Image 1 (cartoon, one colour):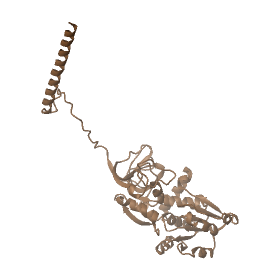
Image 2 (cartoon, rainbow, N blue to C red):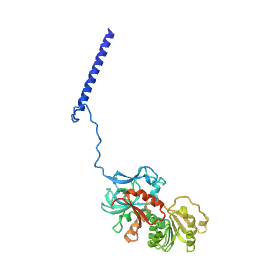
Image 3 (cartoon, rainbow, N blue to C red):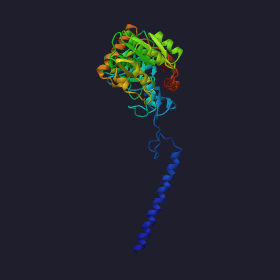
Image 4 (spheres, helix red, strand yellow):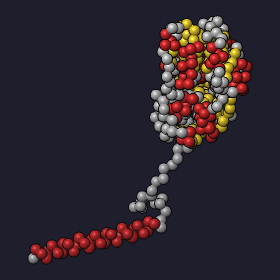
Length: 378
């Protein structure tokens, strides 16, 4: 009797399940032919996310992994949101510096998180400012020399207010993009680290590049006697045109002998210490100072060359400047723009899509002749 009851119960359950599945299949079939606007339908339509059209985009170079210049690609990215004490700059021109290539290659002390946009120097117009910004307003012509994770090889860049400076009307945006790192570094090397005094003799070892030309202008403005070196005839001519009192070709095998024939130097600003530092030690006066601005490898020197003259080798890095030192050097360079002695020299201008070529050129140049700039937009 019990088995009969169980059998009847199972038959009832299975029959009901078959009936219910048939009903569902019928509803599914009908739903496929009905508009999805019927809210009572058991079919839930799939939802395609709508694109947020309120997000404004910009073109920017993006590096997704450290490596060669082939890692630099132009992509569309959201325009950065300006912070409380930041300035959003509509970038017209971006300066290219050797340090930019070291960072991109992953061979620098302080590396950004990936992905990132390269570039530290820029010039353009203020687009907007944060609520606590007091020195700038939209429409101001400015240059800058520091960025957040998203650098200046982009149509817009956010920069902290202390690193934004008035450009005025006397210089172009290309020239403005050539000011930051070159002039700030040159000022720091000569006056903050070298403690240059009027009447002293300075050798700028590698004077035809952006930092070297800036150093010539700063040194002459402060009353120094300037000797510069360059690696090409055109470079030597440019060094002299910029204001140097004398110039030598550092590719001439006898140029050190020629330098030693004259009076030695109180200060040497060294752009390639892994090649020249040993020679520099023989070219300094008593208590001379060699300021190391650039280096691409190790070097062997003879410390005895320092002992007799009690001369010094001093490292120089712009990022190591204290806030007070940075304020001093930037204030003096901005004053130089107003006074008219800051005159950046532009070597070549590249389109944004050719920014990788600019990176290659700044590090592999056989004869620098000023600053390389990327024209981001007109």
